[in-house]
Image (cartoon, rainbow, N blue to C red; front, side):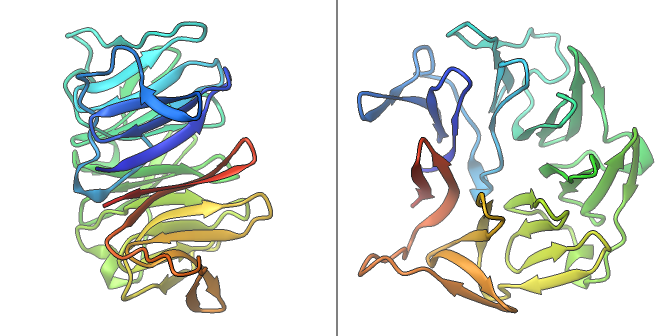
Amino acid sequence: WSAAEIIRTSQNEILLVGDDMLKVWEKNKFVTYPGFEKVVINTTGGRQQRLLAEDKNGNLWLGTATGPVLRRKGNTKFEFLPESHPLRAKIVTAIQVDSENNIWVGTERGVFKITEGKIKMISKYNDMPFLRTGGVTQLPSGALYINVAGRTSLYNYHLDEIKPVNLSNPLLKLPWEAFHMHADHDGNVWLASAPSFRISPEGKEFTFGQRESIRYVYEDSTGQVWFGVSSRGIGYLDGDSLKYLKFGDFSFSGHNISSVKKINGHEWLLTSF
């Protein structure tokens, strides 16, 4: 069983998405969201990208194995896309809402941008391959980084122009996909994988966790960056070294960290095992 993502909505709900399910927090426990008893949500391959996001209008977007579904503000039911929609039947691998309220949907076959209901396929520009999207994250500058599982693994999208990011590390020039991506408030882009990478605003690359499988990147309110590390728990950088928090005798052996969030004053740690 895998728990992939948890959010608090503008309606103050706590929603949890995971393998084949969407759950809502009610009376101190998670229960299946009404109508989602048989909906297939894709979290295969251990890449728990953002599959649940709320836009600035209060609409909720959820990624499934048959395309994104939408719950409009004020409603309780999700709407499935019409059969004729370009995203219908596509496996969703990532959803990101940018600062201009565009919805970015990564799929097994390219990345799409939804603006006020109009959809544009981004993957056709500059020979960006129609491959699985590893993730989308936005920098403070407004530019977006997009990861795809191709020989050119990272692209920069800004002002309606997309360019490949020139990377020096040979590992980043192979067909490669991040488990998770995060752009911090300083403009660094963190790519969680095995090993993991940080790309500074100046384009400098830093490699860390060469022998670890980092699955998630979390930035807290102080700007501290934390990492969810497979079978190791919660890590942080001390200089160039990766170190770990201790939780008494508890062992994370066999657990992949899917997400770390602070909601309503509580820290939520999601795992798959």
